[in-house]
Every structure is written in structure tokens, then in C-alpha cells.
Image 1: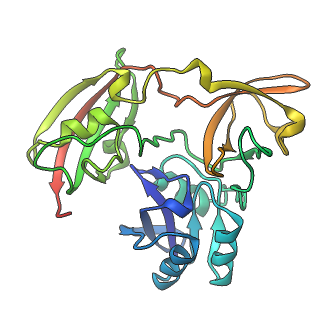
Image 2: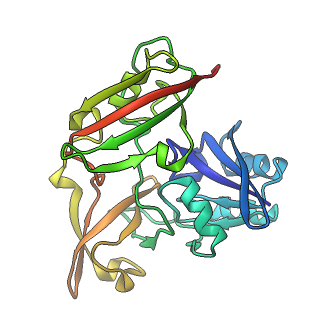
Image 3: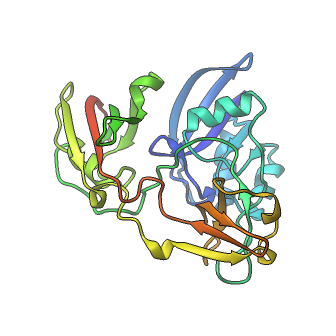
Length: 281
């Protein structure tokens, strides 16, 4: 069995139609035996569905997806598991354990326009989606696909993420906007085998906490919102029909309050980065 996951920065990319990279997992006897990254080589749900079909994909795991894309996948016999977030490896493991829930097409409503949808994601603890958060850095590695190990900690020393613990370096295109600005900048001019410690202020990481990103909506306008609870992460759609993650921070009988800030917005972050390999673009 071959499973494809929409991929960005080690995590499930949240809009199928704009996917630039898939991580493809080869599964035998219910266990992952290998994985690789492939480019999308096209745009739009029809082209992407055809690509996955040509690659022999049996299952697609993704975040947000529209009805047209869902139909295109169904026509090609590809099983869909939408509504996932977080680390792609963990999403696949959750699917293999039968714990990943398919929310189906979830890009049909508009946030703050005609309506809302409220779909629970299937798995994962972090959603480090920062594809549009900075301009490109300068350095010899910019534009090249690189592999780097890292360990991320808060200022008190608490670890929040580590590629070492997962046993696999993070692979990304340096300077392509797949990483937070400070991480990209650090790797841009590193040598293979070099290790660097960097301290990032919020502006170089996930930005400052924006109080305007905390908002309340009437429960009556949110199909499915009756069953969600405080602390849960769900997805809403913006005016372009693209899903974005929000956290439920309050709920009463009539309204529900969401926080659309990234979970690490406003935080200073520390990374120890080891450049493992530099590949061609």
C-alpha cells in the first residue's frame, strides 16, 4: 500500500489544491518500510489526482480539500482521509492504527461570509505552517533541498520538538518559505556537518500574538459546533475557501470563541541545528 500526505515543513499541508510536495509512504504488513518526497508537478485538483494515480497511491491524507478534489480522487479509486494536521509521520501511524478520522470535503464554506464549517482534525499536536511568513534569506544553500536535524526548546529549557527523537532529519528547500524565517536564515549559509545554536525572537519565528485573531461566533452559524469542546483544535474556512486551524478557547450556550494565533505565537524559541546534507535544487 502507498500512502501520500500533503507535506510542508514536516507537517500536513492544509490545502490540497495548493500542495507543492507530497510525502509518500510505502507500507507493508501495516508498517511503514520507506518514504520519499515527490513534487506536485501541476496545479488544481484534477492534475494532482492524476499525479497520485500515476504514482500508484492508494490513500491520500490531507488537511483541507474541496468537493471537486474529493470527487476526482474517488474517480481514481484513491481513499481520502481529510482533516489531518500535525507531523506527517504521526498522521500515517494514526491512520494505520485506525485512529485517523476522515472529515471529507471541508473547503465549501467561507469564514465570516456565507457560513462556517467546524471539522475536528484527526491527529497531531503541532501544525507548523509558515509558508507565507517571510522573504527569502541569502546564502549558498538557498534554493537547494537540504536535510537538517534540530532540537527546539523554550527559554526555560523545555523541549517542544526534535527531529532527533523522530530519527529522521527534516528535509526542505532552503529559502522557499517552508520554514520559519530564523530557521531558514540560519541554514542558508551553513556547512554540511556544522551545528549552530540560534535564539529566535517572535518576529523570526511564529510572530507576535494578535488579539484580533481571537473572535467569537454564534454556535447556530457553525454546523457541528455543538459537539466540540474548549481546548480542541478545529478548522474554519477563510473567504477563499481555504481551511485554517483555530483553537477553541471559550464556549457557552450561544457562542464559541476561537483563537487563530499559532500555538507558539509570541514565544521566543531556541534551536540547535545540524546540517546533515545539501542536495541539488
